[in-house]
Image (cartoon, rainbow, N blue to C red; front, side, top):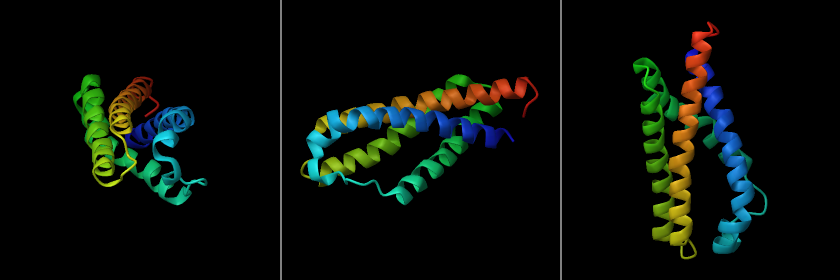
Length: 137
């Protein structure tokens, strides 16, 4: 049950943060740099695969081990590392292979990914920890 609560907590926190980030930064950062590379209509099925799949990895590698060890800092740090490696893989590959992909987009996106995944991992950890303390899970 802790896994399910952690999954939902991370999914909601990450979804909110990403909606805010993409809602504000697409026009300010991504569209000016990438122009026509950005689709007019989002392809929802690959987005859904990412948004529902990515939390499984974060739970497995960051949140659940931190809960086992009762270490909020581990949730934050390990979540941040997952964000760093995931976003760096995407952004550095794009920077290496796509002409319009800029260093500014690369750095901003990697920093965002590191911070948001670490933060949302910590949030999910705290929600599960408190729900466990209240006897809900």
